Length: 163
Image (cartoon, rainbow, N blue to C red; front, top):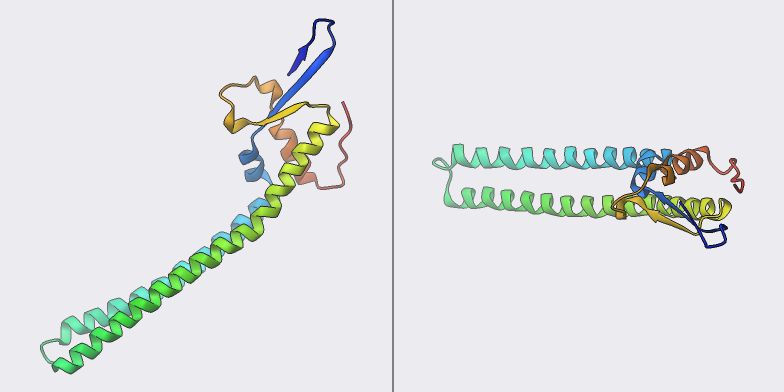
C-alpha cells in the first residue's frame, strides 16, 4: 500500500505478512514439528506402558485382596503408589524435555522468519510491514506472505532485489 503526499510522490509503503502461515509453510519448521511429534509419541508410548503396569498391579490387588494378608496388601498398595510416582516423574520430565526441545528448535526459525521479513521490507522499500494476524482488514494485494514463504524456503541463495 502506498500513500501519496500532496505532490504526488509516494510517501509511505505498507505491507502485511502472516507470520504464522509463513511458519507453517517453512520446511525447517515442518521438519522440526515432525521431530517434536515423533518425540511426543515416544513419550506417550512410554507412559502408556507405565499405565498398563499400574493397571496390572491394581487388577492383581483387586483379584487377590481376599486371599492376602494385611502386610501383603499394604506391600501391593505401596508398589502401586511407587509406580504412580514414577509415572508422574517421567511425564513431567518428558513434557519439560519436549518444551525445551521445541524452544531450541523454534527460536532460531522464528528469528529467521523475522529477519527475512525485515530484509524483504528493506529491499523492497517498505516503510511498515504488519503481522496479518493483528490486522482486521487488508486488501490481499498488500499481502507478502506467499512471497516470504517462497523466499524462506528458497534459502539464502535467493537474493532480494529492490523494486
